[in-house]
Image (cartoon, rainbow, N blue to C red; front, side):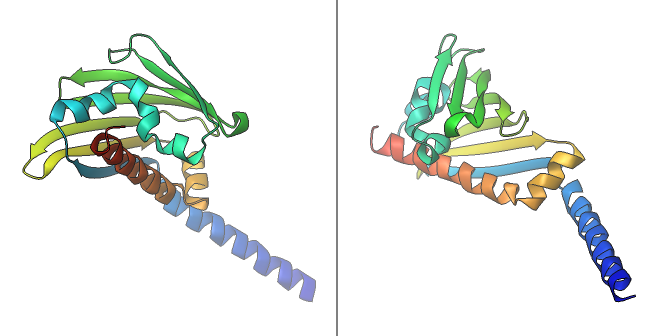
Length: 181
């Protein structure tokens, strides 16, 4: 009798956990993270740091987190269709980002194709605006996913990690421009 009661309690707890997780995961099927930073520099200089993929290693949070990451640029850098391919974390991180749209000194859009550790196609939009304090760079990250992927993102706190990584990248961008890296 006691064993049956214990198993029933465990079963109810598991069902409740999964239900709670799916409820929270539903809110993660569509993620948008907006971050910004003000960089002291010329607008063209800040814009080019983002537009040209050869500059990405100077401010990539992923390369900062995994210095053994290997990368390659394909296509004509700075033009539509140019791609930055990466392979890191001993082959467990794999994908590329592609330059999709450019509006000189004002806007850049990248689409990513992540193959590992999960499959996803987020976008990164960057806008550049001159302010009295410097150039404001706004990064708008968007990710659509299915419910099962969203459940695992909820389970492992992925949105919080994404927010921290995106902010780290903008902080590194600021440093790269302001220190002339």
